[in-house]
Image (cartoon, rainbow over all chains, first blue to last red; front, top):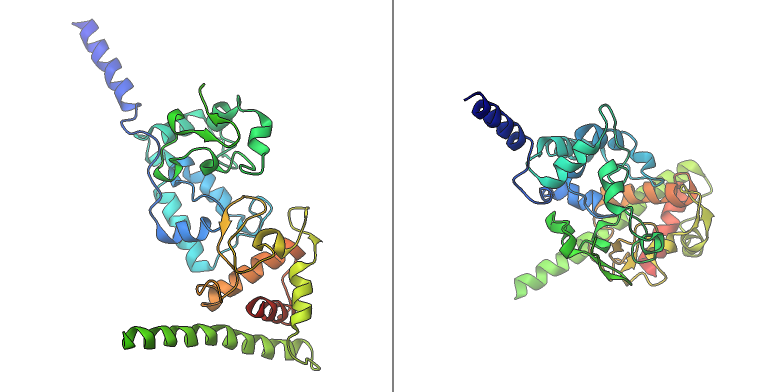
Length: 168
Length: 133
């Protein structure tokens, strides 16, 4: 009996911490997609926790070396959207959960590419395939992840320019 | 059909007036900056658009780096490879159709290429170049 209770308790812990959805929730906010997607892929908000989005939004005048400043009303609206849909609020999605769980307690990521999970997932890729003209950097999800727009980053959907399919 | 035609005509005229009105605003500002202001200069605008400078990222870039040589064609962001719709309003009616958007991109892109915002004269010059190219 005791064993059964223990097993049940263990199972509930495992279930509570597991995800039931693939990938990451798709980006839906029109203003976010228009403004942020003007210069780069409109990353799903579930790819970073709220504290990281907040840190990024606090310095849009120098956004990875570019001026990405917004009008006040757009800044407020986009900040709210990112905060409402950030990774730690969507732990039922596999990628959001993996990203959040990879961060150390108190660690605030500077970018999606700099989260431990992303570094780990991309470390076996040859440097020249990442820096090549068609890709430019790890930040360019859609260059290789053909279903990135749908929030799906499965291995079977990877197609690296000048290389082909990726099998780990 | 006539209605669609009239609507299209109206849209063409109204988008033309957005940039014209904005140029009028810049003219007023330029006269305050410089009492002997004598209008916007397409040639100077071309120089602003095509000349290279050490930009905000520390790399030598010009407006052309991202917008390309042919403003009627799509181009690619120099740093992110993201596609950029044509900048020319004759090729892309979305361009120069909203003052808020014009101001946003002038502020950002002057900072990106010149590491400072443009003066009213410079902004007027470069717009004059873009819309007539």
